[in-house]
Length: 139
Image (cartoon, rainbow, N blue to C red):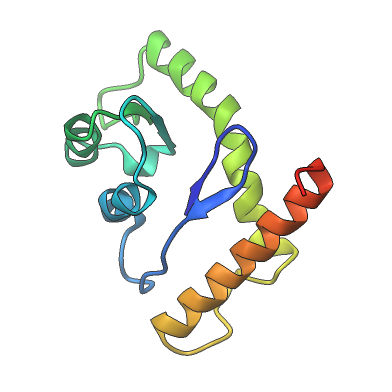
C-alpha cells in the first residue's frame, strides 16, 4: 500500500498471496505510484536490502527505508537516530493500515481469490480517502 506521508491519503497498492514477501513488492508498488524523482520512499526494515535500495536509486527516489541490524553487526548510533526520524514520519502511513484492519475489518480477506480481494482493498481505500477528505474539509 502506498500512502501520502504528509496527509495520509492512500495513493495505491495491490494484493498478493500470503506466501509472497512484502519486501519483493516494493518495485511494483513504486512503479504503480509513479512517484516524481526526488520523492522519499518510507518503509520499515523488512524492506531493507541491496535490491530495494538499487530500485530506489535507479528511479531517482530518496531512500527512507529503515536500517536493519544483522547478526554480529548491531546498528550504529547514527543508524538508530535515522530509524527514529523515519519512524516519526511513518506513523501516518501506519494509521492507514490500522484503520483498514480495525475499522473496516480488512485483517482477513472476505473473498476467495486475489482479484476479488484486490477489488475489496481498492473500495476500502476509496472509502478511507473520502472519509479522511471530509474530516479534513478538503471536500
